Length: 98
Image (cartoon, rainbow, N blue to C red):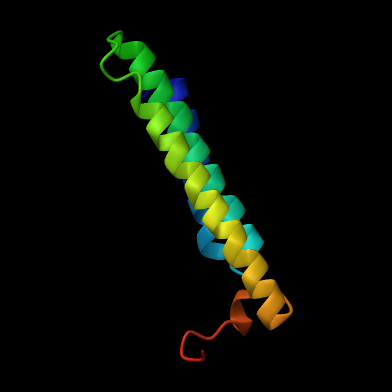
């Protein structure tokens, strides 16, 4: 395993661990998801550079576009949750309540 592969794998697993263990605020969960997406984007970009072909060059940009859409939807949910419930604590959210 190369150093670059180990670095990106550990960064992704660190963000995944943060998502699994620090589930207090919605904002911290969104930041962990964003860290996972950025790690995937950088790793995917480096993989396309190592391949040397131009057929995969647009794929990291598509992943980055999906990441931006995910971030905007997450921030919209964060604002809506903060307005309706008064805080962004995940324990105060109840899926059975409208």
